[in-house]
Image 1 (cartoon, one colour):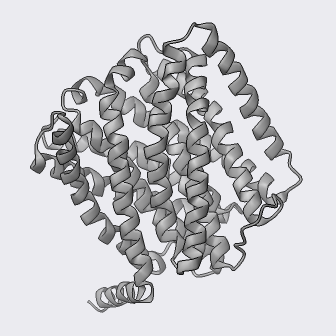
Image 2 (image 1 turned 180 degrees about the vertical axis):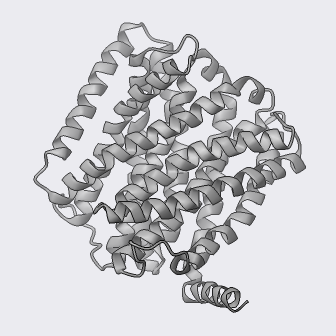
Image 3 (image 1 turned 45 degrees about the vertical axis):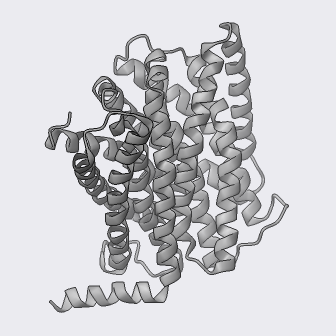
Length: 412
């Protein structure tokens, strides 16, 4: 009983110590829910394109997740720079912030090429019929990354700068805002990129694929061989994790692809998927970012698994998640009704979102804590790797939890 009261006191102390940060985190997740619903509406509205380009859905979670992975990690690193007093905006590329920004751009565009190849291989391996060509995957993935890279980079820097001015805890705000921005911008960009492989002569996407591949490879090679220590380290450490994260995310795409026929009959369920995956990842991403900061500050022992030091942070995640998932379930059904998409009904939508959301968030939080400890023990920066691992895990675990919830509630 005393431990329970001690835990409650710690949590209340956390809220009282940073009420503005807690409020900002809640508002950020409401924003993430709203923008995620926009992304979900796009997904629910392009089922024809997904059926016309078999295998594209395998790429979608990985491509969307990549923006959250790259720029969520950037936000986490900027949060650490803020916490340690090293955050300074400058046009010079050799500053800590400048090297972080260059690394993010190189990774966002360069790894898009690698994910296109991974998605093609996974689609073939799982027997997707009449899967689109490698060139089509490359064009959609890389061209579809151009606009999101520019926009989400600006948002990430703006959040960090505003957080410094308003004295926010950047770890509470950056991950959900960046993930939401990546979702809402990447999906329409991917859809627009599909016109390059649908409505033009065959030689056009083939040539574009070669150009995209050359640009992506050059960006990665320049960053990997750079004389700037932080830039080189970030890119070298991040590539294996981002590709692994993308591979896991493609499994989420395969999971959804296998149910595309049944889900397309009630597109309101498709509307839920992007914000659900995004929210479970961003909620656990808060834990990952806060644990990473505590590791850097020496507040968490990396050689000992102990929930005590992070228990208030973990509780904060679940306190934020309850109203957010509730809002998501109601809003998705209302949005579906407004645009005329079939839905199983408000109670069923709330049930499936709450059940799937809590299952995915619980497991992903375990991944977040474990990933931060393991990467720190190995001498890697958990700010570089924690968010990508959490985001990719949330994609697959969220998709799996969603399908399990549908089965439990008899909606599949």
